[in-house]
Length: 376
Image (cartoon, rainbow, N blue to C red; front, side, top):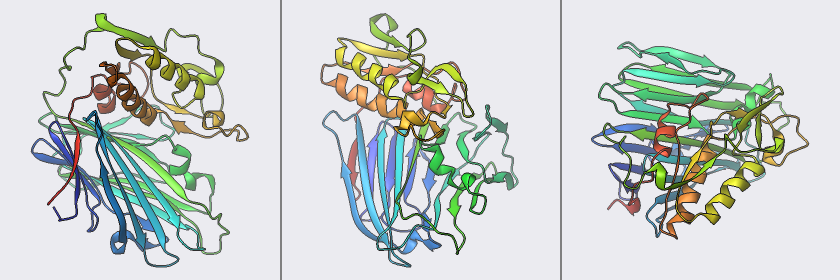
């Protein structure tokens, strides 16, 4: 670790943000490294030459989570600003990257951080946008290419021979991650390669041609990740369904505006936690609670309702409410901690994320303390 590294530490894990070098983040749990992020490229320039303007850590009084925010300037081309925010609770993390042009320039190309999963791995599952089920493969000892193409690799999860699991997911803003899919002249590519020793996900979100007229705008990309170690499965003290108030979306009469809409049309009976209607129900239930809470009936998936993102003028805007589940898990536990209570979200029984690492971790009360500190 370097002198300026910032660290979030909790029960059995550390997450480290590096201000410089070829990696910006690494997650360690137990005795091994599970996940690391490289650096972005903007407009053809690598972030490795960036100047760090800000690197700050934040703890919380309830020790439920901790966060780190960072800002760097790539001093090439028109200069690019790269902002990051990391928030971690035990077993779960939210990662946000902001990319913008500092001067009068535009962001003509973005390649997000390569995601590296150091092995050994016995099984890999991954989900490509447009597909309803994860593909499952045994990585094997030889280097190979599992998938490469314009379409977004939405989720990757790996299982080690000893039962260690790690997962990386695209955030709710799927339409940004799929920017190249809307414009045939724009390049974009997602690739998943590796072997049982190491798996790498690369993410070239878009590259506009030199003659293109490009809107001057910032770009924000969200992601989530989750992990578990053998022995993490048992619940925390107090996880007794008889003593919990239950918010079950499966038995609620949701308004049409709160339901998931299939991309291409067609309403479903599932709630979309990105929608204002479903969010309002969650918040109201937590605010009125006088006990621990178990939330049931959620099954994160892809929704196309642009109105959920307050853009009713758009016909369709694809999004995923998995990171909303994590955000509400954090928000709900923070509000309930003021009263001495806690919240968990029952593991999803349907949808592509049933059985995921994220779903399993949301099913337990959070473990504390989670703290931020600087490596000396």
